[in-house]
Structure formats: C-alpha cells, structure tokens
Length: 318
Ligand code: UDP
Ligand code: MG
Image (cartoon, rainbow, N blue to C red; front, side, top):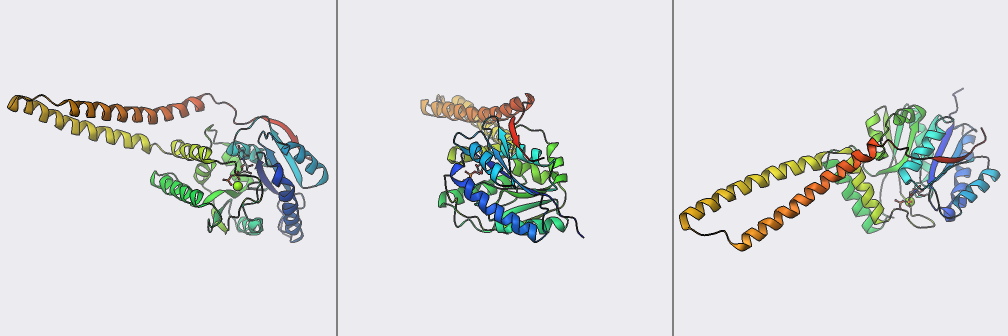
C-alpha cells in the first residue's frame, strides 16, 4: 500500500475574524474528503498563523482548535506581514508534515485543486505552483497593476512564476532548503524558484474574497513590488550607471559647444539653459541617490540579522 502523506495547510491570518469560521468548515470538509480518498493521511492539519491580528482572530483560532481536530494555531508576537507569517507557519509545520500547502485565509484560492497539487507531488514534484487561469474576479485596477508587476519583474531579470501568488505546495525537503535562505527582506515568490528541485504548476480560478476586505491596499502592494525588485535585481543600479554615463557624455559635448561658442561668438550661456541644467541634474542625482539608498537600506536591515518573526504560542496536539 502506498504511504499516505501528512498534509499541512499553512494559512496566515491578519484580522480575518469574519472569514475564519467559514474557511474552517470548507477546509474541514475538503480534508475529510481527501482523507477518505486516501490522498492524504488522517494526521493532516490546518495550521492558522495569527499575524498579530488586532481583532478576535486568535480567540477564534483557539476556539476552533478546541472544537475541530484539524485546526492548529501559531500566534506571532507582533504583526510581521504576510510573507513572514507564512514563513513562520512553514517552519513550524515542517516538523510534522510531509507536504505543506500555503494558501490565504479568504478562500480566494480554489480548495478543490488541492487534489491536483497532491497528484503532482505523488508524481515527483517537490514544489507545485498554483497559477491563476484568469483574473476576471479581480478589480480592473488590481488585475492591471498585477500584470504590470509580473512583466516588470521578468524584464528586470527576476525569476517569478507568472500569475502565481502564494498558493503553492512544497515538500518537506523543499521547505528545509528554504530554511537556508536567511534573508530578512523576504519575497518568497522570488526565493522559491531559486531552490530548484522538480517543480510543476496547477491552474485554478481565483475567486472573490467572500468576507472582510483586502489586507493589501495599494501602499502595501507597491511596497511588496519594490521589495521584489530590490531584493532580487541589481538592474536598477545598472540602469543608473548607464544613464549616468550617457548624461555625462551629453554634458561633455554640450560643454565643448558652449566653450567654442564663447570664443567664436563671444556669447555667454543663457540663464535659461543654466537653470534648466541645474534643475535637471539636481533631480536626476537625487533620484539616483534614492535608488542607491534603497539598496543600502536593504543591506542595513540584512546585516542586523534580526529574527523575521517571534512565535508567542503554538496550539498543537503533538
Ligand atoms: N496577511 C497577513 N499579514 C498581513 C497582511 C495579510 O498574514 O500583514 C494575510 C491575510 O490574512 C490573508 C493573506 O495574507 O490570509 C492575503 O491577504 P489578502 O487576502 O488581504 O490579500 P489579497 O488577496 O487582497 O492580495
Ligand atoms: Mg485575498
């Protein structure tokens, strides 16, 4: 008989009180069906990671843990953001699990494709990416900004899987490899493709959040995109160097023109030109310094080697 693998669903939650009960009942139902079909072991669990929520999320997780044999919980001491919360969950769950699948609490990711994930794993994949087949349900704005983000990332040479968020399966082995990446500026979608191992993808349709609102407003989304670019690509620095060279060359030619003009016609360079140039170079230099500063900021936070999360409590039956 084939060995049944222990599956852990790792779900970061930040202020998800309105959705957790429904999420739990749907996932419990799915778990029971998968266990019955002998896809996963009866020891499989749903692990919620409370990312320092301000509402009653943790109290609810404690209650669900008491009433439901599948539910386990990890409480972070403070809000550390989705990526860190997910990492905390993966690192905790990998001690017990053979297979780990990360998903969001709001059930935007279709739970029915869990079967396909497991199938891919059984066929030898160590990492399986959930890929959205369409973004019809996202708002026009979110769809287009996200599309732009993937295009930009690819252009800048960052290896990301197109239309893949954090709905993915990882084997225990893959998570052990992930543990070796100790960066503080965490962008899992960029790191995981670097691990290697055998990977595959599973398509699903992304649904609407059924309750509560998105915890990724524009500001956080921009921050996340910037994190992705700056943590994985040095091309912005390269672009600046090239631009700098180009502009220096143009300025040099211009300088010769002005000097020659001065001797030939005796005219002084006009006020307008001077002001325009001062403004242009002033702005350009501040921009360049800003980009360099961003990288220095990254180096600063990496060198401190601060922990990426602190776990306050774990609810588990082990
Ligand atoms: N999340 C988190 N910490 C945060 C923000 C979000 O753990 O600081 C979780 C959130 O509870 C959800 C997942 O990350 O399970 C994705 O967030 P959301 O659904 O709000 O993002 P969207 O789907 O709108 O991109
Ligand atoms: Mg969501």
